[in-house]
Amino acid sequence: MDPAYVEKPTENSDSKESDLEQSCISTSEEEINGGGVILDEDHPWLDRAYYLKRCPSINDAFCFEIFEVRVSHSTKTSGKIHGTIYIDSSLGVYNLYKRNKNNAETISFPGTITLAGLPFALRADDPFIMHLDLWHGSDEVSKGFTTEISPFGWRVVDEDITDEVRGRNGAALVTYAVVSSPLVAFVEVILIKGNRKSGAKIYGTITASMTGWDVKRVLFCKKRAKYISVNRSEPIPLLRSLLIVARTSALHVDLDLADAFSFPNAPIASGVAKFSFDCDRAETTQTISGKFGEIEVKVNWWCYYSHQETYKIRNRYGV
Image (cartoon, helix red, strand yellow):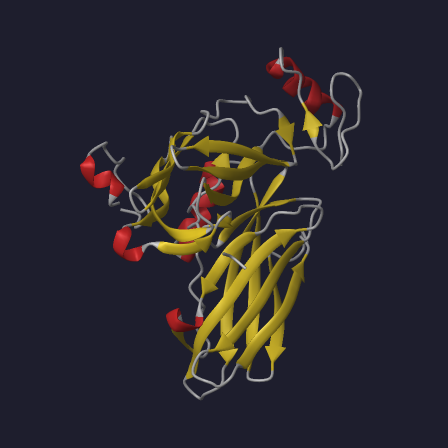
């Protein structure tokens, strides 16, 4: 069984226990700034057919990408968040976030919590539900289902969308997007050399973004006291490796990594690796160097047509 797969949680008393730093044309012929397409509220099915007919170069494939979840509290400015977030889809139930009180995440409010990634791409024509149950101590911050995403029930394409899920003492803002003609990027970040012969004690951040989009995805986030040991030529374990990328956008991987056992700071790598899809090259790599190390960022590109394509990625890379 996939390690990310979980049985759907049941409602019981234990659940409570459970900061990051082309635009197409709609039926009204109006261009939407930012590359998005607003579909007609009364006739989404007709609009979708019209949209595909007017843009024949776009594959009949749309994917959801969940970018981030920002949490706020009604009275506090910072605190520790615990609870669960899971996706219920036709492919199963998978955790994006699961922390108990003993492993609560400290953030400033409003702040972004660190999400795990899915081992597959979410098709936009396949209904799914995202369930949130987040707590600050005994304060319910966000609880309930997001609006069920039904086949072609979405209204905006190629723009980030934010839904609010409220609780008694706060709220969570879920930012996601429907991406047309999506590419699937499998990202690996490998330590080539560190501050010592064996490797490095790594902390810092790795984020991913797309040109033309404001939101970022957190791939790695460790404070100095929570460093991880990585040997040379080994990959750094990421929160998420499979990313949905718009075909017209470049993928930027931003690194800010250092060695925790050096005083005051031993920068291993700091910079941005930029990747654009190349149909002649399935794999692209870039190297980011610092005073005390070197990192290789590797991206394998896949065109998305079906769930079966992402299963091939899972089998190849063991995700």
